[in-house]
Length: 321
Ligand code: FES
Image (cartoon, rainbow, N blue to C red; front, top):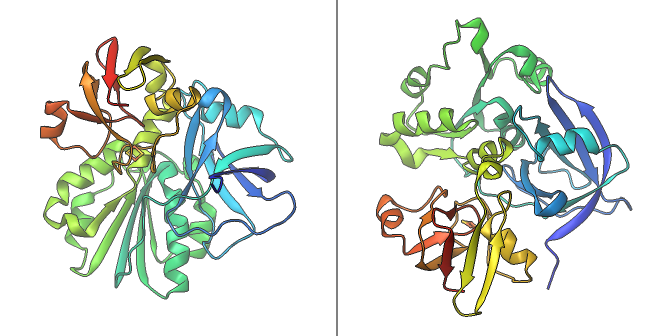
């Protein structure tokens, strides 16, 4: 079976705005990398089964490098802080092949809405739009200019297409999503990546045109992960009904990771609670649904769960595995 992991060399590391570091990854032998599409991300494998997702921000036409940006979370207990503190040029980084949960469709016109580090997948999308001569506009909101990654690049290269919104210059007022939606043409599609609050807000406001609004939901999970929400959780036990085995899920692990560490190979794709590939039947116990895809009815029924993100409310959870 083809490996879905690869080890890449950190070829360059540079600071990009406050608390953002950019890493350029290449094959140590300069071999071409697996191709990727705009909006793709890499899973980065850190210590003790810790996995983080980072969007590829460079042009999808490049085959010799992957570029990612890592925002240092103030509450990080091992993800972004580990990368900021430990990785230097020349180090090897274990990563997945590129995956895409934020596919850029072919439309007449694009509106991009980015919040903070959510700018990263949008950068590769902008590049795609330029190559394909598509009309686009970017709304980029950040707390203040010092924290705006790629501000110089965007303001120097795309000043006409880019609207910056720095909260501290607007009496801490948020980006006016109503105004953006009002001025969005009926042929435009909106692509949004940023903090959960921004995406939820846009989702509610744009409900009437939901088929034209696309979100990078893994970033919501990433915000939670980078804040180590998972790390604040309690450990619990998973009972595998068909295997007659019990496995401990540590506070900083997902069920999927714990089972993989125990030698099980289970189906997964997004590892972010948005694709259902890892959906598993619950036989006993109460899941804590943390995915972005089950309906309210499915959550209430507690008959299945997405083990790549969801946890347990009961000390023991029995699964149909
Ligand atoms: S792997 Fe996609 S929802 Fe779990």
